Image 1: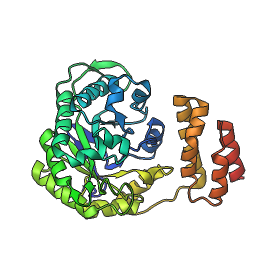
Image 2: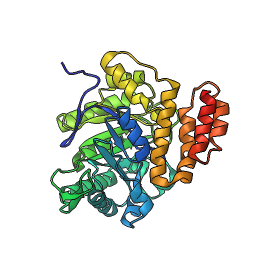
Image 3: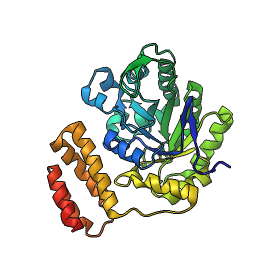
Image 4: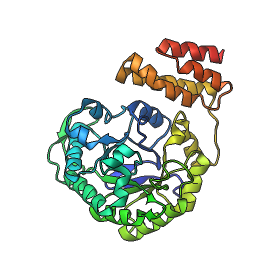
Length: 351
């Protein structure tokens, strides 16, 4: 009998082998980190959010955000923007220049500069506008007639329709809870899956995520779509136990890890083990640090040594969280400028 907690997921015509996902995390879920998460058992991952405006202006840095990790079986590019036509154009660029299996629309980012452009969480204030954005991207994917890249980087004919998904929050604030209207708009517009972060825009990342609303969303979407559209849960999933509770208490089809996976890609390994066997095997310190160095080597490939080593400071600080003497260790980490510096820091730490 199929395991009810850990199981395959379908997003439109995309089949995934499991239901443990890495969320789109700005400044974090680049291809280096996604690669390590895939290695540790993430079934699906999203790029950090990509600006539709920057993409349509051929911004090279923005395009680099969409790069696939070589070991990713499937991944999604997440785009954001407040203009439906620009979002459709951005979707065509994603289709032309990547091998991504899915396009996700950001309707949840609470950052003021994103909201100012009528994107991110601003879309929860205007479900009609959300409908326009989602339907324009869905139509762009349906009617795309150019070539696509395959995983080897070769241009091939577009045969598999790429599903479009959407992620949003409960609503703007406690007085404006609009998840139901947003879900209805997304379904009507042709979205193939819906993710909800169980906080409002006003909450940011404070307070508790509302899993009761997540459970209501699951019921609502199942009824409206005859069970054809999966719902994914985000917010307050930090441990394997959290993932199990989220699945059992809300009925979501997949759990999305965000901050919980930072410096802890083994969260995927442990959660899969916990959902399938009921056990959790702890990861030795050396293994955590080795994962950090693999991530660093991928960052070096993408950005060069100095930029990679500066970026890796926050990542190694996350990998070292909870280790004995981690405060002193972090002081050394934040001064590292080369791979050799990091090696010295950790050789000294491990003795």
